[in-house]
Image (cartoon, rainbow, N blue to C red; front, side, top):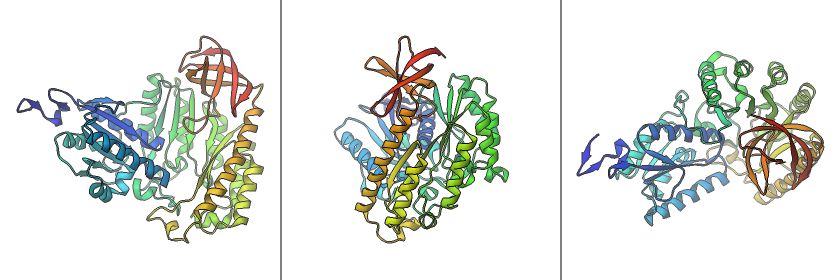
Length: 459
């Protein structure tokens, strides 16, 4: 530990003789949150006081998203907000990390002087260096490592819950969908070794976490780069052997890579929740080709049919995009009719916006108004489908993990609700504790979400 005119150096995690307070704000997806948790771990290990409270922090680190236009705008607005706070003396330094930093590093460094340091997606493990330089008064500091490097095995500070956490099994993507910039931001697909993943899962389960949400940009591609073949099914078998683990949830599966072995493993293991997030993006063959998606509308329909036949009661989540150049009324009508007839329980609807550097951005200029109108139509349709699904659950029994209470009732998630993207099951009953698993009889629906009574409970 060194001194400089009575002040401790930033490299020791100290300012004016005390631990520097670093607040971390995580934007975007679950995969980004895992990186935020790793950065928090590194900062704490370096001696910083890590907090979620930004007011009065010595440094704020914003881990940004840049997947779609709305995410970019949220990130920019957040940076500007903290820039103003910095100017007003309500925080010390500002570090920007993650996808926006990787994608627009030059613009951030030249157009946002309030930012003291920038950390790309290949340099999350160097966050301590960036924060130290920012505290030390150095501005314009930038770290951009290899985005194709092996996945970091850094520890994490779990921020989600005492009962559940994300388990990232791979980084990057090789699918090269025409509208998506993820491969250029996050690099090629890199799997973690099965041993590392299972070890982390065991450690998390040993700390009391009961639900692990397996995440990657494409979990179905797991292992292809390391083992020469897809091995998600094998990985799931090992995870199911962890006695303390109760629920395993899967995000996100590429529709064309869901084979019979994987279906059998999901169907045959009670720990794997019968909830599958499978982004299809569209159903029309011409639009799928323009999107550079593998497979056809017939393939997608057949895949959903096999899943419902093999996994009774499966809940499917998907995402679709409206307004890609070339989507006329007939192509949109085909998508509408597919969602109406398939009655997918959960669906996110996004209007297309061109992303710089992607092949889709070179297509004709999209009609933003038409894309937005079509997205509203599908959102309205899907709202009715989800309401009908909630109504169909009345009278059934389901396990619910309790996440909080409000207005004299508890709320939580069953197998059919994933964090942040779905709603809750509202539970009436006494003596229900947060993070408990309880059995609930669904008795009604309020504002589209199931309500029920606690039948009995166990941890």
